[in-house]
Length: 362
Image (cartoon, rainbow, N blue to C red):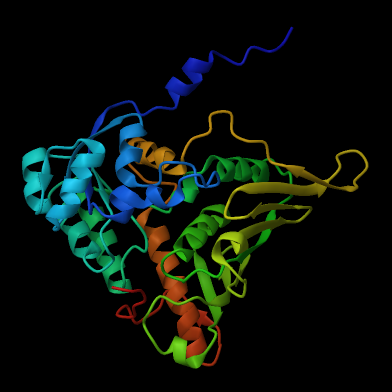
């Protein structure tokens, strides 16, 4: 007789947040509302990615209001999602609508000021898109303000919630590839924006803060700017695990791959997180084997899973999957790769002393 695993509906129900929270979006542009228009018929980008439809699809949260300084974006937001409580001033929105969770999807420049303002107004959780901000001082201030107010600060590197990576972490914990030794990430992405996804994801797998960095930028001219630029480097973490970032790949979408290398095998994510493979010794013969990680039983958008995760973080009283510290470390590693190049490609220890250093486009 087959082992009873439980009723499917109950398994799904048990994973939902216990309460229902009031959700809001600040920043009604691309990440807040429209990015999914770019990915129609692209199956390796599970819909939705935009924060508004993810709130609507997620359990445990209702989309009740939104804010943007541009009235045209607010009008389009109403057309798409049916939201009527719309504001050009986020402070007025919070005062009148009292949201519990705010998805913060503005450009990087105002993100620190708005995060601090939301925390001071008593919002329970902020789910801020990446890059976290532009300067290390701003990142420090965001984390400090949220800690002072008891606000959960979660960074929207939503791959950290993606069910395939959750499965990969479990396989590593089960010893399928032995203890994790190193990570190799192939991506031509700019360091503070898209590479935030890679670095926050790696930080979760590694389970320890970064200790030091060596960086290489394609040219001294590019390294001289504060713009968001691609770069390669080595990151060594406090537990000895090493990461190699390789930016010398031809395209972002086909070239974005991550290898988690263990003592006896490896797990490989290819083609922008759409294919997952395990390479490990056969349990009987010891011969090398290659198998696909099976798809999740209950597949969903990683953004939807992330939104629900933020709801559960309120109930736990802490953020574990991608807290503000992960976003700050991702920004700091990007900046340090550039600083290492500027100093002659030398080792640079973390944390950086100069917190005014910045990276990213306005």
